[in-house]
Image (tube, rainbow, N blue to C red; front, top):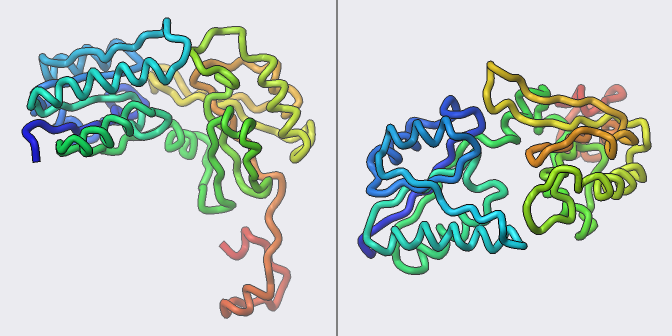
Length: 268
């Protein structure tokens, strides 16, 4: 194993409140800290923990986000190749909707360096808590919004549906306010065929500065989605249309009682 290592950690969603003790320890002991964060307050705090902390390049002039992510990955690996123990710090969960982290881990290992990722609290974790959603109740499906459309993903309307980055539909570059309304209409059109115009959906944004500000929870009919106020961190939550029917034959095979009419809610 070569000298030098890479540990990638997440700060969670709510500033430093979501940072795990394990992540904090890795930040403090690293030879070099590189970060990609959503707010200057956490960046300042990181520099107090470790004076080597430095922002990763984030070039929004690139036509494609993947090119920017590639630059970030190369910057991380440059430090690892020097034989340093590097800690790369990312906003939220470092493994969720963050291509450069996975590429950096994979490439570092291929080059013979020790590399590891630690989980962080993601926007999905916050969504479950803020909306009172138990993903084990009716199941939960999660897709990146553009991928959901262009790959015609199959999904079950009787389970919860989460669509990420709805303001970035069809956009391979970077978010620009005001450019998302037509793609939102297309998404609405697709969803209406499964749920109907009046089905209530939620446009959600996790609270970064809680308790100074709270999570954004916009409850609207599906038909109003193209008119809703969304940002680059908006997520769409679509509640189940109805409960899935219970297979009584399967219940009997499992030794479960089928003496009375049973709903999924009663079973679980």
